[in-house]
Length: 117
Image 1 (cartoon, helix red, strand yellow):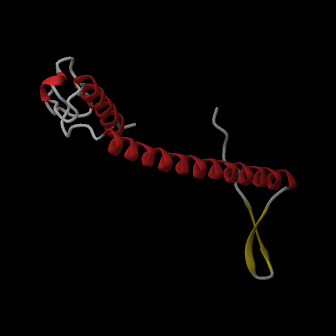
Image 2 (image 1 turned 90 degrees about the horizontal axis):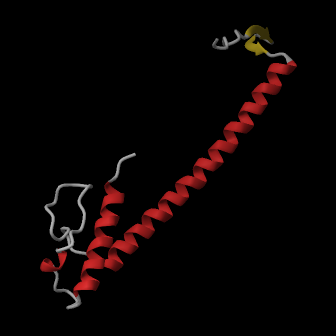
């Protein structure tokens, strides 16, 4: 059973319309404001963490410097993966294991960046 929203008691004080609250209602209002303030602070912290994480991903992507397309696959969107034969499209370092690792990391970064929640 849903709780019904209480109807406020309207009064006039000094010619201005106001709402009268019982002490219990006032205490609930203050508690709700505190909860909302706490949640707002948590949201701000999470937003800062998201920005830091986004910068980290940007820096990792730049550091890895993987290929613009994932080797051995067609550019089909966020679900693409590096294939075992990805070495056929490499040649940046001369070391296919290193190039394949860079390719796989770049694909992982793109997949998580393109993910929608």
